[in-house]
Length: 94
Image: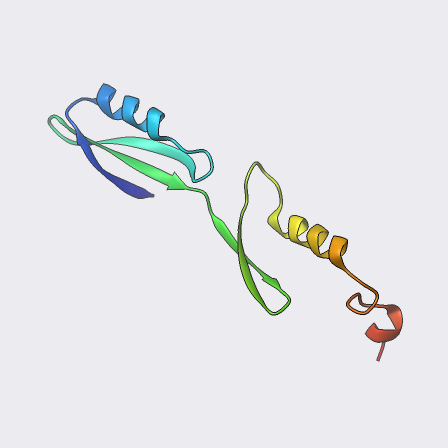
């Protein structure tokens, strides 16, 4: 959870702000927390990032809309594979 910098005097103000600023590309969910009299804050639950190895380096991929990030990268690599870069039974056997 990531705490927002804004503070609010009512729960309604905090909810209105959180609903307005919610970004489905970055946020999974949010919570409004009561810290004391007339003191509310918003905590953001961020979407998780996955690091996926690709060829020469690593690439970070965010899992969006339930799409498996590993499957997506595998499909991208399969689309760009050539006979020289694709493993074959001959190359794979020892």
